[in-house]
Image (cartoon, rainbow, N blue to C red; front, side):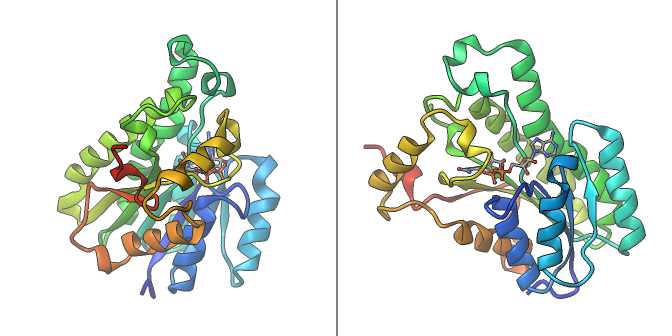
Length: 254
Ligand SMILES: NC(=O)c1ccc[n+]([C@@H]2O[C@H](COP(=O)([O-])OP(=O)(O)OC[C@H]3O[C@@H](n4cnc5c(N)ncnc54)[C@H](O)[C@@H]3O)[C@@H](O)[C@H]2O)c1
């Protein structure tokens, strides 16, 4: 389904990362991939995962708060490949203390960092990717329902996800004429490294599974498959959308 396509993936920390499930789905469908890692701490993990996919998968360092690192990723990508079709942005961060107490107590710096890493980075990455996306393509990001409704402890991350979702709509408007689509997957809770930073995450999993119409939590492979749909021509007419993969949790009123 993705034969002949080239994709770059931001946001793999380990094999439990949502980014990894989408990368695997893209790889299985025939895409050639390049992966990025946040810093030396994560390089070995990502190198091992890349190696496991076989072939020669380049990995590039990228802290998304640093414009020069983003530029270097796309310079390297331009040297390694002729063009780019798929971009996965699966990156978010807020200081731990901002995900514990009341939202009211969010400090200016925590607010800034959460928005810089979790929302602005999509703008920076999309702009840097565009010169290589000469045949159009698909940009996919990850969001969560805490952008729309209050989820206790999600706090500033919910506000950053609201910004990310608006960013998806504005980018899809700007990039539509270049045949580049931009969409977000709004996933139900999955136990990952980032999720463990949210206080009360285990009770969130239980609550979701009890109240979602499907009476269970989402499987990470289901998110990977939606990533595949959004990366492929099956979703050719879809842009600017927030697609829920949450076992239906978001439709419930009571
Ligand atoms: N796990 C969930 O329940 C859930 C639900 C909905 C949405 N999401 C979203 O999915 C995305 C991926 O998270 P995950 O749950 O797979 O956790 P994860 O910890 O596996 O992935 C988060 C990634 O963000 C990267 N990152 C953080 N700061 C960065 C920076 N400055 N520069 C570059 N990379 C940086 C980390 O290195 C990591 O790879 C996030 O946007 C998250 O908000 C997660």
